[in-house]
Length: 480
Image (cartoon, rainbow, N blue to C red; front, top):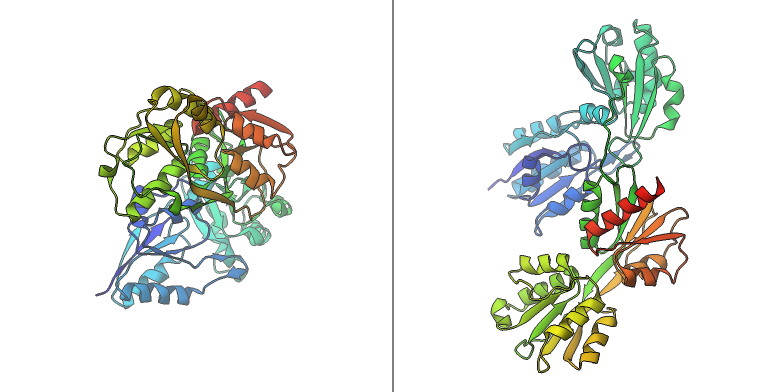
């Protein structure tokens, strides 16, 4: 039985995919994807999905188009639900039409989900409307690759009064400009090169048709070349969100980085995800029987995930915890526990290991026993409070963290650390760049960072992603 293929346009930047497109990714059995995507989309596939990269960039081809067509046919004929994920829109110079025709010829069902095309979205993001009443009644999208082959009638293009949008045309800006001027376009016509739209290093380069080619070396690919009166507009919105304009790198475990990056982006920052820790479970330390415990305490959302993954592997359910009370270090951990069907009985007012220990020391009865489930190198302040109260406990290390810092660091105004282990993983492999401010989630993390060379540091008062945002916002306000 043949499968089917869905051509999905991923949009041209983070958050620009459609709801329907995202739903298709979450159904995929096989994902065939390109460059120029929001990297987070690949993480949206089901666990059983196979991801196959076939991306192409200028001067570097990983798979030829005929090979991609053959791959889609093969996967569909094996009965798979295939999602072909392409940057922007599949049918706007995405060669989606070629893939569709190849599938149609083999009798394979194929559907399309439109995507946000860079030909409109990138100019808009950098202040250029491709149409404007009384100025540009139309816009024309042209591939810049064909300029040298004179496949387009540049004399006809030069006579158009609307906006001209050339995609993939950075290397041909000079040829395009000369041909348009030769065709009668006014050399003083506004023109702009839009480099790396929706990326952290997005750049707009303004000029006229006569001089824009002399500025093209300032741009990087991918780039869009816009010609017309609307290229003279600068309709850049004013972002009044608290972190607008700040570049913030989030480090730590993938889960912490994802949550923090989301909060930073919502607050207007250019969020730079940089996972530096990998979690390795220590399943042997988790008790097989919980009947001897009165309390179970978690110090992180990561610990909760590791614990419940273990329970699933052991085929244990919530009945194993009848009569047991649960304690969590903070709201994020509490929410994660609730997602697994258990509501915390105890959460300290301050989200620290020391305060969790003190709260447990007050809440637990002398005869009760506490099971602590946490990372291998957890804070000793938690158990010190229990020792002082004379309470019985078992401190189980259920996972360890390993450093995974491999790539070059992006430039950032702030770098966020969510744990002492995250500090160690980063600082033992790299140095905090001069001029970058470190943001620590609590005093324990801050004290660990003080062991290493650091130029400047702020500490979040509330130990959550929202607390990190507030700490950065307060710091930005103080510098005004």
